[in-house]
Length: 465
Ligand code: IFM
Image (cartoon, rainbow, N blue to C red; front, side, top):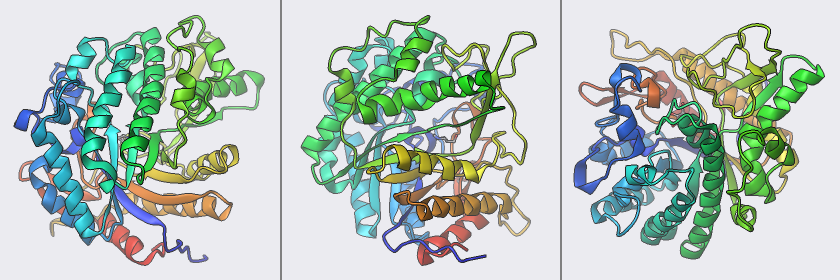
């Protein structure tokens, strides 16, 4: 096997998100978010677990940053909690919240680690949801104000500002299938949310350019690699339809300045898209410096003729309501293993395919893998170690898949493991562990898994071990 070596400037990082790690849910003036409400609603999360304490990162942040340094990382991707910075989603900043992120960023810079900050990783202030949430246009305007508050305070001490993390999840899981906060199941509202997230991205992008001109601007999308079960016209059309909802609903406005015509036609029975105002698509198409790509697995679809019960193994949780608005005639098929503990199939070739598609369609846009990783049922050995060989294998194969895309021309600038720490995996609570560092939730003790040791060898040499 030829040795895989990454170019010297390639950035190795790791990622977390505020609600998943911080805890301190009511401390220092933080207001409630939709995830506080959702996780505290009986039946919404596995075991009724919440992010109240999570990995207690709000108190342990300094030690956690030392872990990043020990891992040899060049960048840390974290998210800013909107309700910590603006407790009700509008109005003046909560000083204590801003100061928390300011200290975090300063310490990262002292350690020589690039801060990569995401403005929104799903924790909408509850007051804004009460006023309509993402289906309401005003939420996009509030988001731009919030961006001005935090970007104004941290400016270009942050190396890369990312507006949104996975707006697909915010819109469709939050407002169509309801398996994420706020748990609404209103297909038309989900499409309005898609648009207002795109608009929010564009409005916040302008703010970032104005207030942090030296910073890099990005957005992170969980683009789907969709495969039709056969080459039949029906299955091919099913794949096209899902591609429109999952990928082009965001790539269209954000990168091409227009919604794809087939998306509007496919969903015409649900909404007339009159919430798109003149100029919105242009606003959404703010020029980016880098596109963040989150990748975990692939999606297999076929046309459903209605004659047998419809399979819905889309990997995005169980609900009587589909996340896939306007795709009632599409079936999501389970895929051959191996699978991770999330039930997601392991398919590194999908990452190569995705990076090459983006390179082909947007050749001038640099790419960054902002999340990739796997949940497995980790076991603590008698000696206290976690020999997570399957995670090491998953990461190795996906890093190799990245190298393959780069060798074929894709301009990939970096790779972030999801996640630095075990954390609150949304509706799955604490059961699903993605960290390369284990968190003992009783003691909050951190232990490097074998994958962390493996990753350190990669980050410090640039050679794939
Ligand atoms: O934990 C999530 C993260 O918040 C967003 N991307 C997918 C991860 C694993 O499900």
